[in-house]
Amino acid sequence: MGLLAGLLAGCQSLPPSKPASQFTAQEARGAAVFQTHCARCHYPTTTQGLHGPGLQALTKLKAMPSGAPPTDARIRQTILYGHGMMQPVAIDDADLQDLLAYLHTL
Image (cartoon, rainbow, N blue to C red; front, side, top):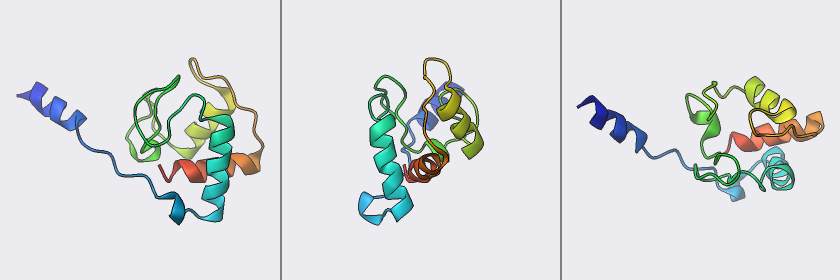
């Protein structure tokens, strides 16, 4: 019974991503940063992996793929310093703020 409950919990649908037509200016800039620096390894609107994990609902989950809670500080650290197979991404603070805003739309 516990296994069945666990399997069913794993099948829960994730909240949908915010439509691009509803992005704020900052979120739209963040989407562009994502396309430049992240899209080659991560899908934004699915949990399916590419070279890295899919990021749908990343900021709405209890834990990131690493198991750590998805706080802005932790996501920022992962982006700037890398984690596991993810290499650090060299972006300035303004682009990072825009990217974090975009990640919250997923």
